[in-house]
Length: 347
Length: 288
Image 1 (cartoon, rainbow over the protein chains, first blue to last red):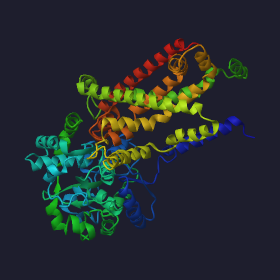
Image 2: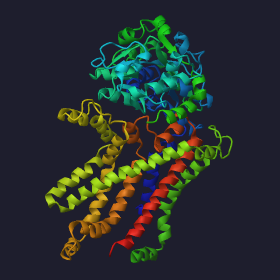
Image 3: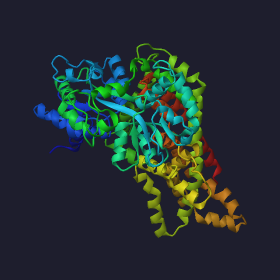
Image 4: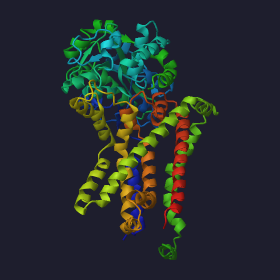
């Protein structure tokens, strides 16, 4: 009969294996895709994962929903045995990941769909699998004349009702750059943008710590107008919250969202196959429809529904109205901007 | 306890050996990461290739850091003070309630601990918003014409944090007040002391260990409450946890973030030892 000590150590070992599954699966593990949290995860679980599995002998895979920056932290902490095979990034973090040598190039030559992507989406270090669009968001019950320009946020009638976010997010930083451009600045000069935010201070009802909080603030009537992410707004709208999205006449701020094969991934072939799936017209056209409303990057996908109505009639219109920012330049100074925002925009 | 220990020792295991697993666990999962954190803070660049003291120079030489640290520690003081006032009243009422009411009351007191902090914090967004409960009531009564800005203000944050951390204050206070012999208060009254004198000279000194324990827990929880601070405080108020997150996550500047966290840790430890010193002092104060 085994004694108590043996039983205990066996239990401890089993427990440890449970706690650190990497110990037992160091060699072979299933494909891990770090998507974004919330509606993105939902969309990828419902559409992308089934498509990938159908086309890859039913290969097992796991979604690990994380913010871009947290994905980088997780991979950096284990460069040689990364716990993620495919990362999903906003433009700023994508350049950081590439700069820190965390990603491998996507095998463009053997790809079927890569060449069909819009020019802006083509990047061998990580093709864009969808776009995010940032425009003006407002509450149509409170604001009867729809805003048309970023400049409208400064209108005196919106005093105490405007929401913005700090620069921690891609949205916050991208918006600062766009406002700077509107006032004569650029990706390397946001001086005018900071001045503009100072002028906006009396109008501000909220400076949210993250874009997700903006949604709550609309719901609670704390703010009536703000810069907002198209997808986040569509979700709110579908839940019955009175919000509308309009593209400002300066153009919709567009972020390409890129998928990257992680360096040293044990599942490189499957990782590339997943990105292939995400670029395919079948997946992208399904994800464009309600309730997902994710902007496609594949030119073979014709615009439809709300995306066609609100964002871009077709690919030519998208090219014309989407503003892609130079995140290489933005990243150079982003740290100092965040520091400046910390100091100057404090209450 | 001595007997139990010698009993085990008699079977061949010394108390030291029994403590070994826990020690190993602490070294492995607490001391080692802490040392690692210290190491990371000693790199000059974000890629962690050059060693140096640049992060520390930047951090300690910047008045902004001290302002953020100061406002974080001050926030903790305000929350703890508010919790103490409410918590003491609540605990006082609790020990004087009939038993059946106590059962109901303890559920109410502990209930917040059983709900997620995120949910509780969201509730405060609903309460404090422009169309929130507070503003609606004030407008209905006719005290205000335009909604007050409560969310994303210092006052709003203190109230929300105090609510979220209240059980941590109330529970130790209840324990302390329950142990208090009611005869002592009667004796004090019989000897001619008024209610206030009895409270000040008998009740409070005897409850002091509970007060200190409650303050310590509330204080530590309030200054590190990242979720509530960012959701109710917003992006315009910067406290140490958010500062740390910003540098570590958004900017991937681990060395600077490590320096911030060590500074914060040291500051919190200093506050905790201050509380402990007060605790030792209080033992002398309480007439045993």
